[in-house]
Length: 242
Length: 118
Image: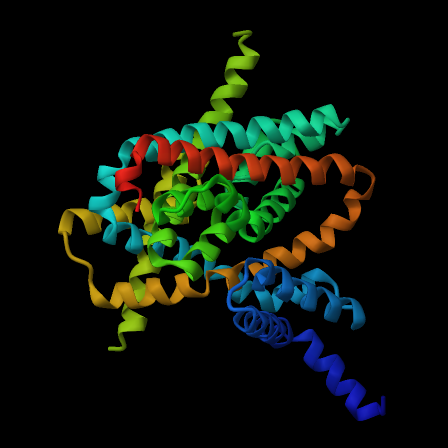
Protein backbone atom coordinates (compact mmCIF):
# COMPACT_ATOMS: atom_id res chain seq x y z
CA UNK A 1 0.00 0.00 0.00
CA UNK A 2 1.36 3.47 -0.86
CA UNK A 3 2.06 5.86 2.03
CA UNK A 4 -0.91 8.33 1.77
CA UNK A 5 -3.45 5.51 1.34
CA UNK A 6 -1.91 3.65 4.26
CA UNK A 7 -2.19 6.64 6.59
CA UNK A 8 -5.78 7.22 5.45
CA UNK A 9 -6.55 3.58 6.32
CA UNK A 10 -4.89 3.90 9.73
CA UNK A 11 -7.03 6.96 10.41
CA UNK A 12 -10.34 5.46 9.22
CA UNK A 13 -9.78 2.12 10.96
CA UNK A 14 -9.33 3.89 14.29
CA UNK A 15 -12.59 5.90 14.19
CA UNK A 16 -15.93 4.54 15.42
CA UNK A 17 -17.17 4.97 11.86
CA UNK A 18 -15.29 1.85 10.73
CA UNK A 19 -16.87 -0.51 13.27
CA UNK A 20 -20.34 0.94 12.76
CA UNK A 21 -20.15 0.80 8.96
CA UNK A 22 -18.71 -2.71 9.01
CA UNK A 23 -21.57 -3.92 11.25
CA UNK A 24 -24.26 -2.50 8.97
CA UNK A 25 -22.63 -3.59 5.71
CA UNK A 26 -22.09 -7.12 7.07
CA UNK A 27 -25.69 -7.29 8.30
CA UNK A 28 -27.12 -6.05 4.99
CA UNK A 29 -24.97 -8.68 3.26
CA UNK A 30 -26.27 -11.35 5.65
CA UNK A 31 -29.85 -10.15 5.20
CA UNK A 32 -29.54 -10.16 1.39
CA UNK A 33 -28.47 -13.83 1.58
CA UNK A 34 -31.36 -14.53 3.99
CA UNK A 35 -33.84 -12.93 1.56
CA UNK A 36 -32.37 -14.81 -1.39
CA UNK A 37 -32.82 -18.00 0.61
CA UNK A 38 -36.46 -16.96 1.19
CA UNK A 39 -35.90 -16.61 4.96
CA UNK A 40 -34.63 -20.15 5.31
CA UNK A 41 -33.72 -20.66 9.01
CA UNK A 42 -30.26 -21.98 8.14
CA UNK A 43 -29.45 -18.67 6.40
CA UNK A 44 -30.02 -16.64 9.60
CA UNK A 45 -28.44 -13.17 9.09
CA UNK A 46 -26.87 -12.97 12.58
CA UNK A 47 -24.25 -15.73 12.20
CA UNK A 48 -23.56 -14.70 8.58
CA UNK A 49 -22.93 -11.07 9.60
CA UNK A 50 -20.84 -12.19 12.60
CA UNK A 51 -18.62 -14.37 10.41
CA UNK A 52 -18.12 -11.50 7.91
CA UNK A 53 -17.19 -9.07 10.70
CA UNK A 54 -14.83 -11.54 12.39
CA UNK A 55 -13.12 -12.25 9.05
CA UNK A 56 -12.64 -8.53 8.35
CA UNK A 57 -11.33 -7.91 11.90
CA UNK A 58 -8.89 -10.82 11.58
CA UNK A 59 -7.70 -9.71 8.12
CA UNK A 60 -7.12 -6.13 9.29
CA UNK A 61 -5.74 -7.17 12.71
CA UNK A 62 -8.32 -5.05 14.49
CA UNK A 63 -9.09 -5.91 18.12
CA UNK A 64 -12.62 -6.24 19.50
CA UNK A 65 -12.35 -3.10 21.65
CA UNK A 66 -11.61 -0.90 18.61
CA UNK A 67 -14.45 -2.54 16.67
CA UNK A 68 -16.89 -2.11 19.57
CA UNK A 69 -16.13 1.65 19.73
CA UNK A 70 -18.20 1.85 16.56
CA UNK A 71 -20.49 -1.16 17.00
CA UNK A 72 -21.69 0.08 20.39
CA UNK A 73 -24.12 2.45 18.64
CA UNK A 74 -25.94 -0.55 17.19
CA UNK A 75 -25.59 -2.53 20.43
CA UNK A 76 -27.12 0.38 22.37
CA UNK A 77 -30.38 0.13 20.38
CA UNK A 78 -31.04 -3.26 22.00
CA UNK A 79 -32.33 -1.36 25.05
CA UNK A 80 -35.12 0.60 23.31
CA UNK A 81 -35.85 -2.42 21.09
CA UNK A 82 -36.54 -4.58 24.15
CA UNK A 83 -38.75 -1.85 25.65
CA UNK A 84 -40.60 -1.77 22.31
CA UNK A 85 -41.50 -5.47 22.61
CA UNK A 86 -44.33 -4.18 24.84
CA UNK A 87 -46.07 -2.95 21.66
CA UNK A 88 -46.72 -6.30 19.90
CA UNK A 89 -47.58 -7.71 23.31
CA UNK A 90 -50.20 -4.99 23.91
CA UNK A 91 -51.68 -5.77 20.46
CA UNK A 92 -52.04 -9.44 21.42
CA UNK A 93 -53.17 -8.72 24.98
CA UNK A 94 -56.66 -10.28 24.70
CA UNK A 95 -55.12 -13.40 23.20
CA UNK A 96 -52.39 -13.51 25.84
CA UNK A 97 -54.98 -13.29 28.62
CA UNK A 98 -56.95 -16.22 27.24
CA UNK A 99 -53.72 -18.22 26.93
CA UNK A 100 -52.49 -17.44 30.47
CA UNK A 101 -52.51 -21.11 31.51
CA UNK A 102 -50.47 -22.46 28.55
CA UNK A 103 -48.12 -19.49 28.91
CA UNK A 104 -47.47 -20.21 32.60
CA UNK A 105 -47.14 -23.96 32.05
CA UNK A 106 -44.80 -23.69 29.07
CA UNK A 107 -42.73 -21.08 30.91
CA UNK A 108 -42.21 -23.25 33.99
CA UNK A 109 -41.63 -26.53 32.12
CA UNK A 110 -39.48 -24.99 29.39
CA UNK A 111 -37.23 -22.96 31.68
CA UNK A 112 -36.67 -25.92 34.02
CA UNK A 113 -35.79 -28.21 31.10
CA UNK A 114 -33.48 -25.60 29.54
CA UNK A 115 -31.39 -25.13 32.68
CA UNK A 116 -31.42 -28.68 34.07
CA UNK A 117 -30.71 -30.46 30.78
CA UNK A 118 -27.83 -28.09 29.93
CA UNK A 119 -26.18 -28.54 33.34
CA UNK A 120 -26.89 -32.30 33.45
CA UNK A 121 -25.42 -33.01 30.02
CA UNK A 122 -22.37 -30.77 30.51
CA UNK A 123 -21.76 -32.41 33.92
CA UNK A 124 -22.10 -35.94 32.52
CA UNK A 125 -19.56 -35.09 29.81
CA UNK A 126 -17.06 -33.78 32.36
CA UNK A 127 -17.34 -29.98 32.06
CA UNK A 128 -15.64 -27.87 34.75
CA UNK A 129 -17.66 -26.31 37.64
CA UNK A 130 -17.08 -22.83 36.12
CA UNK A 131 -18.64 -24.01 32.88
CA UNK A 132 -21.59 -25.67 34.67
CA UNK A 133 -22.49 -22.52 36.61
CA UNK A 134 -22.13 -20.40 33.46
CA UNK A 135 -24.17 -22.71 31.21
CA UNK A 136 -27.19 -22.96 33.56
CA UNK A 137 -28.78 -19.64 32.47
CA UNK A 138 -27.95 -20.09 28.76
CA UNK A 139 -31.56 -19.74 27.56
CA UNK A 140 -31.94 -16.40 29.35
CA UNK A 141 -31.10 -13.11 27.63
CA UNK A 142 -27.36 -12.30 27.92
CA UNK A 143 -27.48 -9.38 30.41
CA UNK A 144 -29.62 -11.39 32.85
CA UNK A 145 -27.58 -14.58 32.24
CA UNK A 146 -24.40 -12.69 33.17
CA UNK A 147 -25.91 -11.49 36.45
CA UNK A 148 -27.17 -15.01 37.26
CA UNK A 149 -23.78 -16.60 36.52
CA UNK A 150 -22.21 -14.15 38.92
CA UNK A 151 -24.61 -15.03 41.75
CA UNK A 152 -24.22 -18.81 41.33
CA UNK A 153 -20.43 -18.82 40.97
CA UNK A 154 -20.01 -18.85 37.19
CA UNK A 155 -18.11 -16.56 34.83
CA UNK A 156 -20.24 -13.69 33.41
CA UNK A 157 -18.31 -13.47 30.11
CA UNK A 158 -18.70 -17.22 29.61
CA UNK A 159 -22.44 -16.96 30.40
CA UNK A 160 -22.79 -14.29 27.70
CA UNK A 161 -21.03 -16.57 25.20
CA UNK A 162 -23.39 -19.46 26.01
CA UNK A 163 -26.47 -17.24 25.89
CA UNK A 164 -25.67 -15.74 22.50
CA UNK A 165 -24.65 -19.14 21.09
CA UNK A 166 -27.94 -20.61 22.35
CA UNK A 167 -29.90 -17.74 20.78
CA UNK A 168 -28.33 -18.30 17.37
CA UNK A 169 -28.73 -22.07 17.68
CA UNK A 170 -32.40 -21.83 18.64
CA UNK A 171 -33.14 -19.37 15.82
CA UNK A 172 -31.51 -21.75 13.31
CA UNK A 173 -32.91 -25.13 14.46
CA UNK A 174 -36.22 -23.97 16.01
CA UNK A 175 -38.33 -24.52 12.89
CA UNK A 176 -37.13 -28.12 12.53
CA UNK A 177 -37.79 -28.97 16.18
CA UNK A 178 -41.26 -27.40 16.09
CA UNK A 179 -42.13 -29.15 12.80
CA UNK A 180 -40.91 -32.47 14.22
CA UNK A 181 -43.14 -31.97 17.28
CA UNK A 182 -46.07 -31.17 14.98
CA UNK A 183 -46.84 -27.86 16.73
CA UNK A 184 -48.46 -25.55 14.18
CA UNK A 185 -49.97 -22.53 16.03
CA UNK A 186 -48.02 -19.25 15.96
CA UNK A 187 -48.52 -18.53 19.70
CA UNK A 188 -47.00 -21.90 20.73
CA UNK A 189 -44.21 -21.73 18.13
CA UNK A 190 -43.27 -18.14 18.97
CA UNK A 191 -43.43 -18.74 22.71
CA UNK A 192 -41.16 -21.80 22.52
CA UNK A 193 -38.62 -19.93 20.40
CA UNK A 194 -38.52 -16.87 22.68
CA UNK A 195 -38.29 -19.06 25.77
CA UNK A 196 -35.38 -21.20 24.55
CA UNK A 197 -33.54 -18.65 22.39
CA UNK A 198 -34.44 -15.27 24.01
CA UNK A 199 -33.84 -12.15 21.85
CA UNK A 200 -32.25 -13.83 18.84
CA UNK A 201 -35.08 -16.39 18.73
CA UNK A 202 -37.55 -13.50 19.06
CA UNK A 203 -35.91 -11.74 16.10
CA UNK A 204 -36.36 -14.90 14.02
CA UNK A 205 -40.00 -15.22 15.17
CA UNK A 206 -40.75 -11.64 14.01
CA UNK A 207 -39.30 -12.43 10.58
CA UNK A 208 -41.75 -15.32 10.23
CA UNK A 209 -44.94 -13.83 11.75
CA UNK A 210 -45.85 -10.78 13.84
CA UNK A 211 -48.03 -12.97 16.04
CA UNK A 212 -45.19 -15.42 16.67
CA UNK A 213 -42.95 -12.43 17.43
CA UNK A 214 -45.33 -11.06 20.04
CA UNK A 215 -45.44 -14.39 21.89
CA UNK A 216 -41.67 -14.84 21.54
CA UNK A 217 -41.10 -11.40 23.09
CA UNK A 218 -43.44 -12.34 25.93
CA UNK A 219 -41.60 -15.62 26.58
CA UNK A 220 -38.21 -13.93 26.43
CA UNK A 221 -39.25 -11.28 29.00
CA UNK A 222 -41.05 -13.73 31.33
CA UNK A 223 -38.14 -16.19 31.22
CA UNK A 224 -35.73 -13.36 32.05
CA UNK A 225 -37.85 -12.22 35.00
CA UNK A 226 -38.42 -15.76 36.28
CA UNK A 227 -34.75 -16.73 36.02
CA UNK A 228 -33.56 -13.53 37.70
CA UNK A 229 -35.74 -14.49 40.69
CA UNK A 230 -35.43 -18.30 40.64
CA UNK A 231 -31.66 -18.74 40.40
CA UNK A 232 -30.77 -16.67 43.51
CA UNK A 233 -33.63 -18.43 45.33
CA UNK A 234 -32.25 -21.82 44.27
CA UNK A 235 -28.79 -20.90 45.50
CA UNK A 236 -30.26 -19.78 48.83
CA UNK A 237 -32.18 -23.09 49.20
CA UNK A 238 -29.03 -25.10 48.45
CA UNK A 239 -26.93 -23.05 50.87
CA UNK A 240 -29.44 -23.29 53.69
CA UNK A 241 -29.31 -27.08 53.34
CA UNK A 242 -32.83 -27.56 52.06
CA UNK B 1 -42.62 16.01 14.47
CA UNK B 2 -41.55 12.80 12.81
CA UNK B 3 -43.46 9.90 14.33
CA UNK B 4 -40.32 7.76 14.41
CA UNK B 5 -38.47 10.36 16.47
CA UNK B 6 -41.37 10.75 18.92
CA UNK B 7 -41.67 6.97 19.20
CA UNK B 8 -37.99 6.37 19.85
CA UNK B 9 -38.07 9.12 22.48
CA UNK B 10 -40.90 7.33 24.30
CA UNK B 11 -38.94 4.07 24.20
CA UNK B 12 -35.89 5.80 25.68
CA UNK B 13 -38.03 7.46 28.37
CA UNK B 14 -39.41 4.05 29.42
CA UNK B 15 -35.94 2.48 29.32
CA UNK B 16 -34.74 5.33 31.51
CA UNK B 17 -37.61 4.72 33.94
CA UNK B 18 -36.78 1.00 33.94
CA UNK B 19 -33.12 1.68 34.73
CA UNK B 20 -34.17 4.06 37.52
CA UNK B 21 -36.49 1.45 39.08
CA UNK B 22 -33.77 -1.23 38.90
CA UNK B 23 -31.19 1.05 40.56
CA UNK B 24 -33.56 2.20 43.28
CA UNK B 25 -34.87 -1.29 44.07
CA UNK B 26 -31.47 -2.98 43.67
CA UNK B 27 -33.17 -5.69 41.59
CA UNK B 28 -30.93 -8.03 39.54
CA UNK B 29 -32.80 -7.22 36.32
CA UNK B 30 -31.81 -5.30 33.19
CA UNK B 31 -33.46 -1.87 32.91
CA UNK B 32 -34.91 -2.51 29.43
CA UNK B 33 -36.91 -5.56 30.63
CA UNK B 34 -38.41 -3.49 33.47
CA UNK B 35 -39.00 -0.64 31.00
CA UNK B 36 -40.86 -3.07 28.75
CA UNK B 37 -43.09 -4.14 31.67
CA UNK B 38 -43.81 -0.48 32.55
CA UNK B 39 -44.65 0.43 28.95
CA UNK B 40 -46.85 -2.65 28.64
CA UNK B 41 -48.75 -1.71 31.83
CA UNK B 42 -49.30 1.84 30.55
CA UNK B 43 -50.50 0.61 27.14
CA UNK B 44 -52.96 -1.85 28.67
CA UNK B 45 -54.35 0.73 31.11
CA UNK B 46 -54.74 3.36 28.36
CA UNK B 47 -56.21 0.76 26.01
CA UNK B 48 -54.85 2.59 22.96
CA UNK B 49 -51.59 2.30 21.03
CA UNK B 50 -50.04 5.65 19.96
CA UNK B 51 -49.06 5.47 16.29
CA UNK B 52 -45.61 7.03 16.82
CA UNK B 53 -44.75 4.38 19.41
CA UNK B 54 -45.93 1.59 17.12
CA UNK B 55 -43.82 2.95 14.23
CA UNK B 56 -40.62 3.04 16.30
CA UNK B 57 -41.18 -0.29 18.08
CA UNK B 58 -42.09 -2.14 14.87
CA UNK B 59 -39.09 -0.61 13.08
CA UNK B 60 -36.71 -1.85 15.76
CA UNK B 61 -38.41 -5.27 16.02
CA UNK B 62 -38.11 -5.76 12.27
CA UNK B 63 -34.31 -5.56 12.46
CA UNK B 64 -33.87 -6.95 15.96
CA UNK B 65 -31.29 -9.43 14.61
CA UNK B 66 -28.98 -6.57 13.50
CA UNK B 67 -28.70 -5.46 17.12
CA UNK B 68 -27.19 -8.82 18.16
CA UNK B 69 -24.30 -8.66 15.69
CA UNK B 70 -21.83 -6.73 17.94
CA UNK B 71 -22.46 -9.15 20.84
CA UNK B 72 -22.16 -12.10 18.46
CA UNK B 73 -18.76 -10.87 17.27
CA UNK B 74 -17.60 -10.60 20.90
CA UNK B 75 -18.72 -14.19 21.45
CA UNK B 76 -16.71 -15.44 18.46
CA UNK B 77 -13.59 -13.69 19.75
CA UNK B 78 -14.07 -15.21 23.22
CA UNK B 79 -15.17 -18.63 22.01
CA UNK B 80 -11.67 -19.50 20.78
CA UNK B 81 -10.61 -19.78 24.41
CA UNK B 82 -13.12 -22.59 25.03
CA UNK B 83 -11.28 -25.08 22.83
CA UNK B 84 -10.55 -27.71 25.51
CA UNK B 85 -14.19 -28.03 26.63
CA UNK B 86 -15.89 -27.69 23.29
CA UNK B 87 -17.41 -31.19 23.22
CA UNK B 88 -19.45 -31.05 26.47
CA UNK B 89 -20.38 -27.43 25.77
CA UNK B 90 -21.57 -28.04 22.21
CA UNK B 91 -23.53 -31.19 23.09
CA UNK B 92 -25.12 -29.52 26.14
CA UNK B 93 -26.13 -26.41 24.19
CA UNK B 94 -27.58 -28.29 21.21
CA UNK B 95 -29.48 -30.97 23.13
CA UNK B 96 -30.83 -28.64 25.82
CA UNK B 97 -31.98 -26.10 23.22
CA UNK B 98 -33.83 -28.80 21.26
CA UNK B 99 -35.42 -30.11 24.49
CA UNK B 100 -36.42 -26.64 25.73
CA UNK B 101 -38.10 -25.71 22.43
CA UNK B 102 -39.88 -29.08 22.21
CA UNK B 103 -41.08 -29.12 25.84
CA UNK B 104 -42.26 -25.48 25.81
CA UNK B 105 -44.15 -25.94 22.52
CA UNK B 106 -45.74 -29.27 23.50
CA UNK B 107 -46.79 -28.09 26.98
CA UNK B 108 -48.19 -24.87 25.46
CA UNK B 109 -50.27 -26.78 22.93
CA UNK B 110 -51.39 -29.35 25.47
CA UNK B 111 -52.67 -26.70 27.91
CA UNK B 112 -54.19 -24.53 25.16
CA UNK B 113 -56.11 -27.41 23.67
CA UNK B 114 -55.99 -27.93 19.94
CA UNK B 115 -59.04 -25.75 19.29
CA UNK B 116 -57.46 -22.43 20.30
CA UNK B 117 -54.08 -23.33 18.93
CA UNK B 118 -54.41 -21.72 15.56
